Image 1 (cartoon, rainbow, N blue to C red):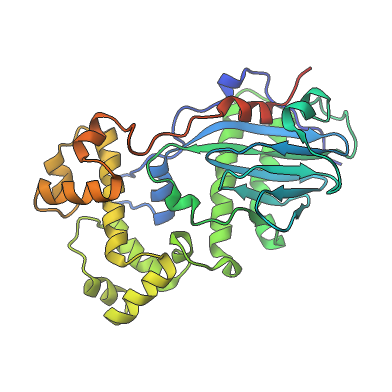
Image 2 (cartoon, rainbow, N blue to C red):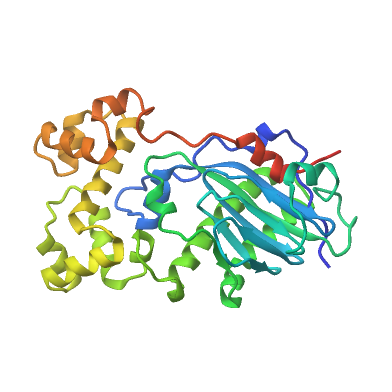
Length: 355
């Protein structure tokens, strides 16, 4: 038996984290791995974290969302149906799932039921937070909704399928600690429980991405899949660790122990772009982050990323980011607009109804 999930008693505003959960950069001599670096550039922020109970047979419809959602089934089971995905997914206790594409979806105890909006489900007491021990046999779901506020978030999101379903027993075992801690913090709130729940939700997100990455069955085309490829991950690691180095196709091929032609074809097949295109894009993402979050001048940024002149750097930046470096530094409105829309709806989704 599992106790009911209880959310901390606070307003939605106090449940949103305005501070990025991961900052780019480590101590002297330390390097982030490519997944951590990309997540840091995406600057994930938490709209809401928490849990809710589905108290009766119902189909709950959730609208289109921005960012990425990461949930876990803590008890019971239900169906997940995502728009444009042909087959429904049965979620069992211990399963974790990511929804990175923002598609409308529904959670249902019976596929034949007519869906109701989540706000209506909350109002009719079909889905809510509640005190421990009130309901036997309910389904419990917990997790978080993350906004990716950095530029070009599609580098991560488009590398993922519409549903990432973590269901293998070995993977569920790897998630168990985070899920148990989340359950305890929501069941019996203590001082600091809200912040701990937020960090646990973020840990769940990273762990789910890691498990998806290491699952050979998920191998496909895209940046994330490349990190699971022994040779391509070495090449990407080289570019991330020293983006200002004058990398060439030949020097990267030598690092991974392949011929130039085989490496070029393999990289394009796995990642979807050429090695030089990837390198340029990564440099521009780093440049955009520094333009927005540091006082470094254009010349210093250009030289640190391997460009001998501001002009060459500016041309590359405009080609990738869609505007000049100076336009970007003055205003990011035309490039990489932060994800903000719809936060209140998704806070309500996890907070539920107290009525």
